[in-house]
Image (spheres, rainbow, N blue to C red):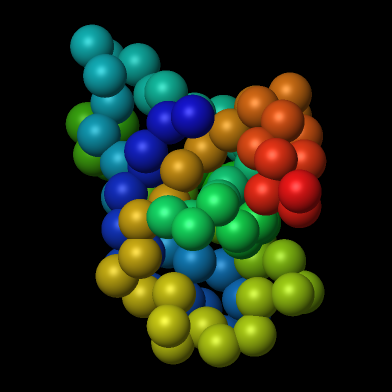
Length: 94
């Protein structure tokens, strides 16, 4: 699980925008990684990485289940591989 930052804003097209710092010159995330919030709720998937190399932005395509978009602003988001995501989601459902 990798912290990717706080949500800066949500677009009208249901994408959350955050900013990440590369670790030792490499991005710790990839497009299509799963994203959860502090409460381990599924938020969406990384859709795009853009902007300056030293401090890029990440666009997260939000799940249809995310209803109140304004409450997402300022929340911490975490990226997970598919395997990590399945393990966490199965634990949360118990």
